[in-house]
Length: 143
Image 1: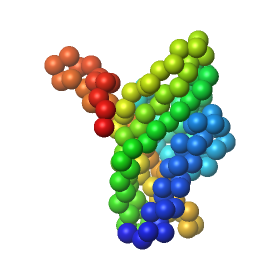
Image 2: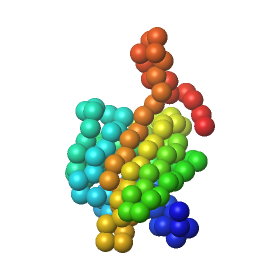
Image 3: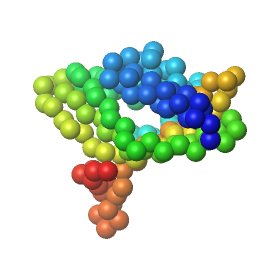
């Protein structure tokens, strides 16, 4: 794995974090391929295309006055023109009703492709563990 490639991928993922904090949909569009497939925590099971991905963030921005996003423990594997990474992420902030929330930690996986020399996110998946007996998500875990 080239240090240069790792820096380039980390920079693309950081653009997502910056775009969320700024609530900037145009900035969020840039790191993704147009046909991104996202397995997000919201239904349906998959969101296909950048417009579907951005629609998820639009809903978040409608609920939150301020947004923060923290990413921890990003690990990357790079081979040729494909890469993947995994990390823990947490969305937090102040909701429009004035209530501050620390959010919850989720598991995040990224699949990236190098297209014309630029790394782009082609797939992401966000999940929470669940309690098998109750069938409910466990949202109070920390990395």
